[in-house]
Amino acid sequence: MYTKAIKTAKFPYHIIIKPIGAVCNLNCSYCYYLDKKNLYPGVKSFRMTEEVLKNFTHQYIESQPESVKELHFSWQGGEPTLLGINFFRQAIKFQKQFCRDGMRITNTFQTNGTLLDENWGKFFHDENFLIGISIDGPEDIHNFYRRDPKGKGSFKNVMRGLNVLIKEKVEFNTLTVVNNLNGNQPEKIYDFLKNSGAIFFQFIPIVEKNSDNSISNESVGPRQWGNFLSGVFDKWIKSDIGEVFVQHFDVFLGLYMGMPSSLCVHAETCGKAAALEHNGDLYSCDHFVFTENYLGNISELTLSDMIDGQKQLDFGN
Figure 1 (cartoon, helix red, strand yellow):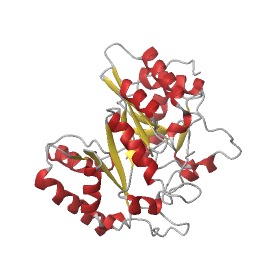
Figure 2 (cartoon, one colour; figure 1 turned 60 degrees about the horizontal axis):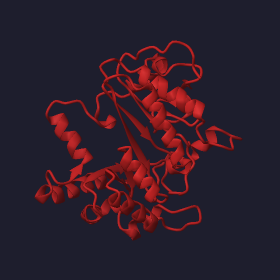
Figure 3 (cartoon, one colour; figure 1 turned 180 degrees about the horizontal axis):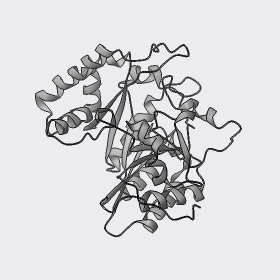
């Protein structure tokens, strides 16, 4: 446990938490995070300890400026459901223990959905979690890249998990990775997501490099990505304004109205959304978990020192 005084950060900041590192029960061929296990050779357990969880929760809350009245805990992986519900029950206890007067704490949870059951659904509902569920489209499209380690498609288990969220009245959004396959079928993807019961859509373009620095075959092309968004927009604008919400469109509306971007890739600068690994290591961003972007460990440095440090400032600029 870090025992030194915790400084207040200069600006509000956000942390994406990887409490089980890159460990996952799927083996999606385009995943950028699975090989992050290689940063920790010889490590057998990637489960975040209770000590690290408590230390992080304390620092994350305590170091936020006084102006922060609502704080988000974003749980990702890997696949965080592999930790089990009790881990997150403990996380909630620590949040309540360290929560400042007048501060509201919320939790978001990104999952592939395959392990969700009634117990998870009731927990998410009771604790007001917002769930992001990863799904790339109908079965033939989804299963093309999103398979388990034995090569079996994950679609049926994902849909079972999605229906658990609907049954238990859990707020959720869908996260669809746009790749070279579904990138040509925006109308089909949009209709599928809408018919599945979702009303909040996130679309993430996958652009991955091969070992020789060439762009992978799975990656969506630049014009393909633009055409995909245009196709989704044309479907959405006809009848779904105010009924269905697409992250990119909401971001651009906010920018048009003079508001700051809620999505880092459309902001003028970044650097205020770092990533925490299972052992307390902090990296500049969850898409830049590389040795050169390592900021330190929360057992040795405070989150605010690392977030406000020159290395992170240079990264953001």
